[in-house]
Image (cartoon, rainbow, N blue to C red):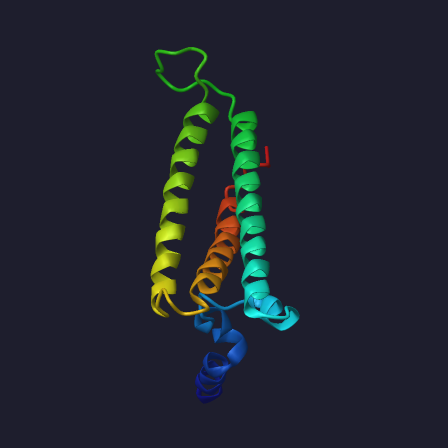
Length: 152
């Protein structure tokens, strides 16, 4: 029992166990790479802005692909529907798309809040917001993939 308790405490103190929870939402490999590899702040911000745009395009592509997969893999009729042509995929995809619009609004507002910790006049206000959005996109992509919409 003593060994189990000791092992438990060692594991909870390990940086590998706690790193995901302790990473700052406005930090990540993209911001580090842009600041390290650019000549000045303006170029670094542009670099991060481009990576954020790419991340947002990838998220939009994943959403579009998932909607298509939902419709393709859920072709059955809706139980007791007045519309014979309405499929489960149509209903599911409608709700999925609405949830994604709400999620994007959440992401944008949340990251503006994160950026406001620094102050709007600080040089790293927008980079913090961009990195926050990239981080949230990355996590949300994992959530969407949990739907297994591509399996049938």
